[in-house]
Image (cartoon, rainbow, N blue to C red):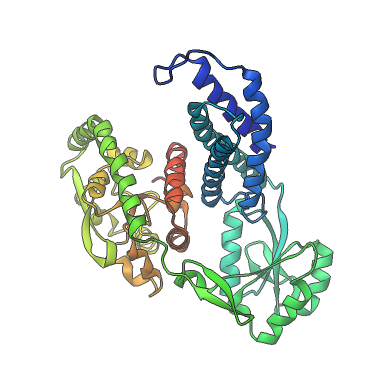
Length: 462
């Protein structure tokens, strides 16, 4: 219904801009009847909806998918426009203003994408309040199963209502993680599914002890109506950008995809960076000067702090930030072992005594990183990307996590729009790995739009 309303709105806006507004770009001698265009729209809307369905925009797995959804909306509206043009060539009586069609294409993409964005926000909000959640259990109470539970509990947008764990050995009622307990053993899985009306069974891949055990679960629930059986990606999640299945001589084989970014992708990303960064610097230049003066008046020391970080392929560079700490800040932590431990664990302190008055405001307002716009101009950073890694942190990363160094670090990213410093260190790495595996220019644009409300919300900023 949203697509119907938004497509109709787009066509009406196109008519208004093309024929009813006095825009010098469009020459207008006679205003065509709105009835003709209204009847035309009644024909075009079903055609565009069929195109959307053909592109998978109404498949359950693609709904609420965000970036991929916007990409498919763009493809659908573009193909729809070319279908209208082709029909105009084939049927001489089928006439329309080219300016109207061009505007209809632009408005259709913007309106349909906006409608789906609003729908997703409504669904997310309802999920966060406990509605539209699917009862789920995790099979496997090992470290991976607990890690999955931690992520699901931290993100109600997933649509899962996590009931607890099922494991081969843990007895019913045994605490596993937080308020979650073991619901029983594998032998009781059928009873658990019926008792709790389970709709999602999630298998922790590292908990699978034998092939026969896995096949047994797939036989029982792989084709069960009303139950989705899902296998966590485990090791594959951190070494690939995704998995594909292809038949060879009727034998399904899993293929490992490489990092998504190609040479053309990098050119698009650079174009986006420079087209926004250059005017952005000019726009905030007075603010940069005001902040510099405030820092100088507040405490002695340099205006800019240079932090040595890892760039693409491990090349180090100095990331610029406004100085937010006293120059003798480290001495203030000598008598605070708890703060030292927190700093070692999270590489950030929530109540940092080293931060100046101006610095605290800059951090809260996320203005301390504005000088990194110049790092972007130098080609060392990107507007969107993984968070920066210091040489001291590199030891905490596994050999697979070093894939984070295949792209330039970003001023914003998934970690920024999902809680910033409130996100655990492990979750930050997972966000960054997800970004690399699923990169597209649409994802960058989406994250840029999400950065503004995240900045205004100030969640996790300290």
